Image (tube, rainbow, N blue to C red; front, side):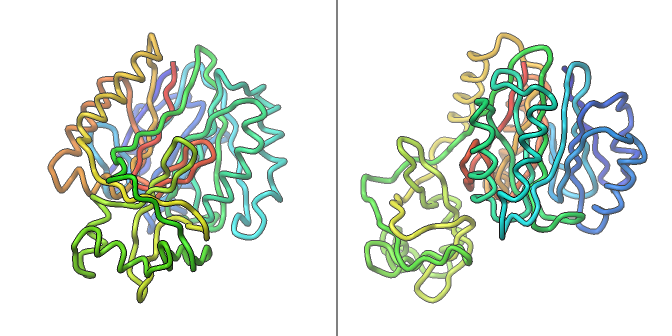
Length: 345
């Protein structure tokens, strides 16, 4: 297979699609003012080609902060796209669509991956979708984008089958626990992503005391010290969004009795190198890498003048392109401040 990336900072779709011929699957990354227009134009340019899209920022070796980006797969790919609607109310209602699409392309865990763009209620969407995908050992990689139509409360998905080899999903975490202290969450509000107390004390107070910071610095400090939810041997990162009285609002749900730890930033260049080496060890030949990087990672890397270097390092794997998202998806996990990717042989 081959991967195409095109962009137009001016928001001209035909400019972004220049050179793209016979695509078998397309991902559209647009801006809020032109998204609906770009969806219609894309269908006219490539009628009937399976596609998914969202509002966000695309990248290959550079980030396209404005305009429109196109990521497409050609030569040896079979894909089918669909949507799960009403995800805040009843995400399971449309799960039969995913099941039918899995059957349609004879999806298998070795050569097929699910890529999704979600516009709400990510945790429930992933739990629902992965309950179906795991029956065939199919992995998932995706993220959260802003919505336009055409669906505001939905998850667009694509099953992408690599006819010439395997495909595998990865997740990168550049944070590690500060210490072995564990916190039990309570007085949470799942609908508001609110974290009220940690070990019976106001969450804001606990966070400030451990890091010796003022309240005004909390939202900036989360770049270096987010929370982590223990999930077996794995850690799901939870970013802080804002302060609400003595509570903290997060970018993903926290539930009563969740076990949390405080994380600290590690040497992310070294961890990125380890991720790249792991992928190389798993693949003799790499045709394409599609990744989703968290907005907070993008801001962190950019503040340290490392974003371009990071993207250039990832490009050493081969054709690499992706999306700056607001949350990352890895199989059944909805995480923050992470990178997830799909690697095609």
